[in-house]
Length: 106
Image (cartoon, rainbow, N blue to C red):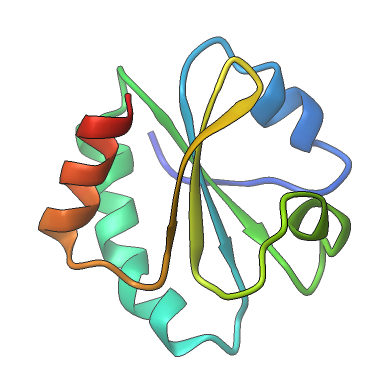
C-alpha cells in the first residue's frame, strides 16, 4: 500500500471515518525535514499495510485541516484512531524511532 494524499475535502472520510488507525503526515514541499522523513514513512506504509494507513496532508494546499488540529511546525505526524488524535510527534524522526512511536501508539 502506498501513501495517499488527503485534502481538506477528503479528510473526514479518509481519516476520521477510517476503519483502523491512520498516521497523518502534515508536510510542505519546501520543508527539508519533511523530505528527510518521507522514505521512512514509505517504509512504514509498506511494512504496516495491514495494521495502519499512512496519509499525507500538504499544509499549503490544505490549510484548514492543519489549523483545526493546531499544527504549528512541520513535519507533524499524528496518529488517529476512531476519529480522534491519539498521539502526536513534531519534527523528523529517525526511522527506528518512527516505527517505535507507531508501535506504542497503535
